[in-house]
Amino acid sequence: MQLSIAQTDEGALVIDVQETRLDAAVALSFKDAIRNAAERAGSPVILGLSRVDFMDSSGLGAIVGVMKLLGGDRPLELAGLTPGVKKVFRLTRMDTVFRIHDSLPATRALSEAG
Amino acid sequence: MTDSKDITVDLVLRCESSVEDVCVMLTRMEQLLDKADVPSAQRQDAALVMAEALTNIARHGNDAQRGEITCRVSIAQDGLECRITDHGPAFDPSGLGLASPPPEALAEGGYGWFLIRRLTTGLQYQRRDGQNILCFRVPGTPVELPVSVQMS
Figure 1 (tube, each protein chain N blue to C red):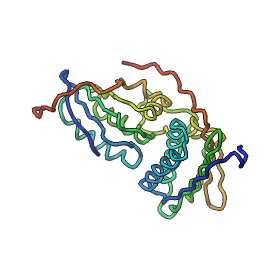
Figure 2: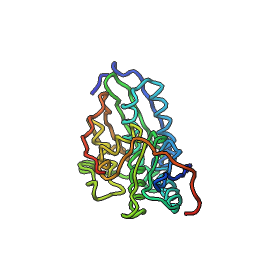
Figure 3: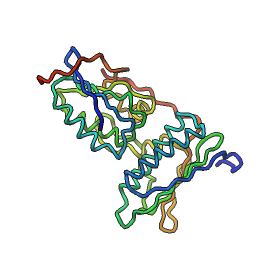
Figure 4: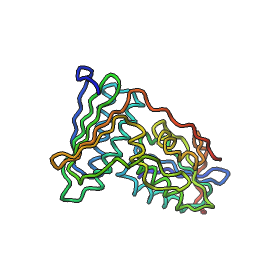
């Protein structure tokens, strides 16, 4: 699972997913990889999905799982949804529980202090 | 149903009943639909419905019931006619996916059959000769999306 990790000046942790598919075959490794990446400091956690052109309900379930892992004081936000991914969120109305950004915010190199 | 004369391309793909094999086949199916100039929204709907149906099959059959899954997609003028055959246990889809889990429940599953129903017409299930046969159509005009109010 390829991820690119950075922070914004405002202190958000940005995790940009470098995969094209979030499906049943990768759902578990995706969840594990995000959990590891989110050990770094930063809030909210913004998940970049602009490279993901296919997501099924297993991928959606994994994203919801990550949201729950992070807990209530560290919100999970989403950015850069492609049309296919956006459609799954809208059909299931799960777009109502995430803050969704059109694109990823500007980031700087990750400080390892956290 | 569509008359056979309307069908322009028939795709038949087979794979083993495992989640990994299913995902490989789905990627191949998408490439073939792309090559056949199926519009991207329709291709995405078909890929999603297939993924949900095939993942269910791969997850629910035990080892003895694994075996081949066959997917047939007939590209017609006004939609994709799909037929999935597998050797897994019989099931009753009639009550599945009539509603999606409420968003506030933050469910990690239970969306699959809802998406299948939402994106298809003419869903039919048959059990015949120890096989499940699921038929449906992915319409040429993509389904309208509900209007959601976003929390922020």
